[in-house]
Image 1 (cartoon, one colour):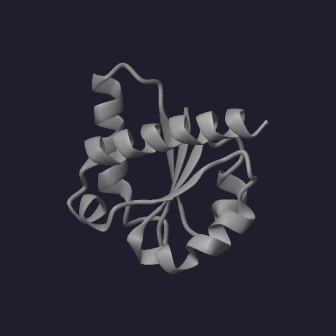
Image 2 (cartoon, rainbow, N blue to C red):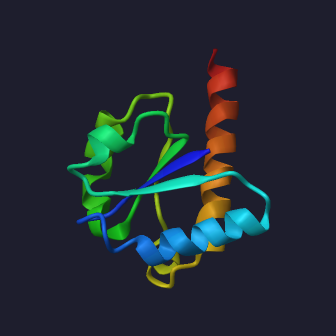
Image 3 (cartoon, rainbow, N blue to C red):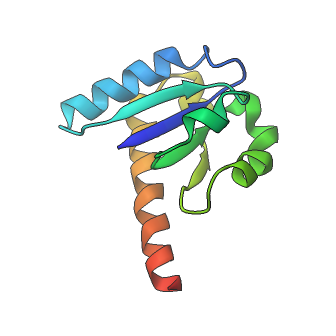
Length: 109
């Protein structure tokens, strides 16, 4: 599974990424998490299962949705979870969003 975590410069999310990876490993999930800036999103989004948008770039959420293929869900990360680096909560929210997005797409077809 590939997650792309978008923040302003691409560097402020490293602690959150590390905690998300730790939770994923503890739960036996094979996960790749790419930290990306808005500028790097065009390269990093390929083959992503979800794009997570950090609070610093939440104002660009609509723009991110336009740049990401429709088959990939885009989700804003909760500000408190991001700020407190709650990797477990962000991972659980991302997994829920992926599941709901896939279920919705199946019902739409």
